[in-house]
Length: 79
Image (cartoon, rainbow, N blue to C red; front, side):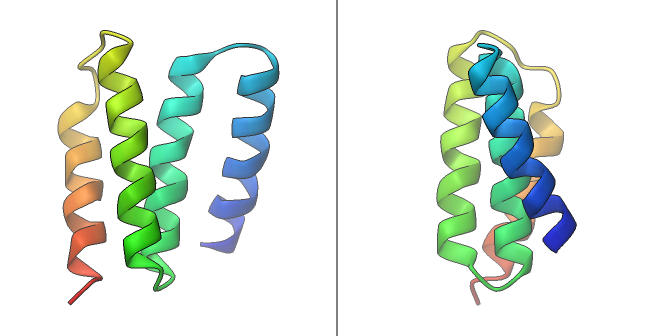
């Protein structure tokens, strides 16, 4: 999970710098999932929700079911 967190940080920075908002949204979702899997459920869920909102605002539905499954798994860590 640490590798996912590190690479997601890099991905967010590069995509922001190069102005690729869809990539920022997707990587934010993965970062949130990784945080949740490391025991930071509330922070992870918040980031996934943020990424999903951005994803949808950009007008795409591709991968949404998969991202919602990641959100469900993240919620599962908050028991």
